[in-house]
Amino acid sequence: MDKPAWILVDAEKRAAKHPEALKIPSELLRSEVKPGSLVKLIFEIPNVRGERMWVQVTASKGKGKTKVLTGTVINVAVTPEMPGLGEEITFRPNNIIAIWNG
Image 1 (cartoon, rainbow, N blue to C red):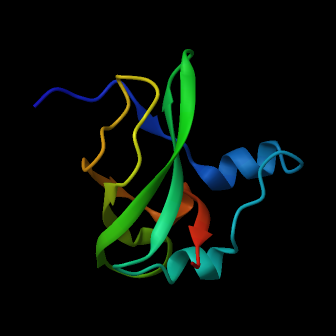
Image 2: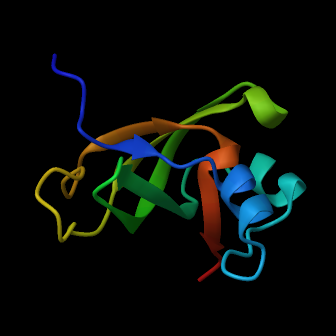
Image 3: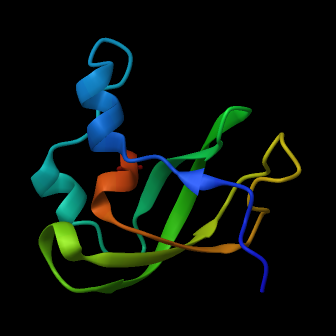
């Protein structure tokens, strides 16, 4: 399988670098995300562009910062190289920029 053109942004580092532009949920809230939760992640093609997309969490393994989450993209990307609707994504709590509490 080919490596995707995109990467997931580390939201903690991005928020620390640009606190006025990116406010993320607390570390505790991000670590408590579980299957069924909706989270927003930033997908980025280095030196090209980024997109913020919603992902529905389908699985969770581990605890805290080392927790590994799996989810499904639930919106359509503008950029074709980004993950598509329904694509499965693996990520960590540090990638989460928002949690939807419907």
